Image (tube, rainbow, N blue to C red; front, side, top):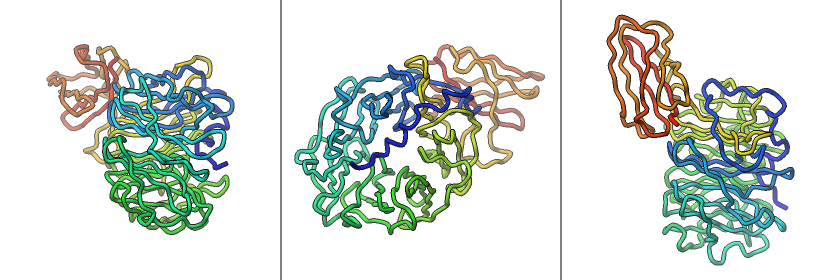
Length: 450
């Protein structure tokens, strides 16, 4: 049976269950994925925007009970979970792909035989899911559904393993109402009869889609799946996973041979890749761009790692989290991000995801860069106290919502203050950003009102 990347999450449900977990100071807010199980892992996650995130849950001793979705449409103030599939025995989910707060897609393969596959979607926020598998797809014994990917709400593809020497790729341009098969002449042939794609090993940016294979190659389409090119084989690498790009040229992926993982770097859009080895601090469970910046983030469950890189993966800076095994990380922008882990091992529906709450990322360390500011309580009901490190003569405060719109502003002129109280109870529940400016300093912090 073909190896699914989901198996890397199943070895230990939560290493953090055996030591006191301490979240990173930059990721202090714990949200509840609402999975109705203890030690349920948020094993796949797709951040759509600053308010909307979709995820897939995994629970059970065999690590294959992954038929539950979770989603938020209010920046994580509340998460809703439920079943995608009617049972846990027929299909194993390959990936989950959010489009908006109402629409999400998933692909899956047949669990008992390890082949073929289906595509499902929801158009009502997860309340119900429909089988929308392309007619005529995944019928061959060699078929295998690796992922479904949408570059916009109407245009998407589903990738399948090679059948008869040609990758099985289907495309829709009408939101899944109908699908057409991409001609084999438009797809470079497999390197051998044993080359195939891997579950959830893909990334899209605009109309460009990349996917990795088990022979150390990366396929690329710049026209939403109509035509494809392929990279040369990465030296000493077999399986390619965790593909991430910050722009059309600069990207990272995890390359592995057996149990050893290496970080691969490209600066030419994936045509060629450089082996960076395993830089200190990098996590191989997930690698993601910090959207809107040239920075990357990575996490790991086995090594309890959570780090970021501002030099295209060459070095990694630890966020300071302790005894928490992270499975997924993703950003809507340089101020809004989520890191998926495990729900509580004693209390069902509690915990499972942390949110970023610190200064904007991707900004060079300089005198003009904002500093983090202490405010409490956070989360808050709207009554907030801002604590300054030293007394200031005057401050200007603005509060923005997740869309960047100013929803509150105040200028306080005093002889000096070390704290300032704000009443934001008139604001709706959600994530907000407080910017505070003094005579010569800037401060920034995220706050959740619930």
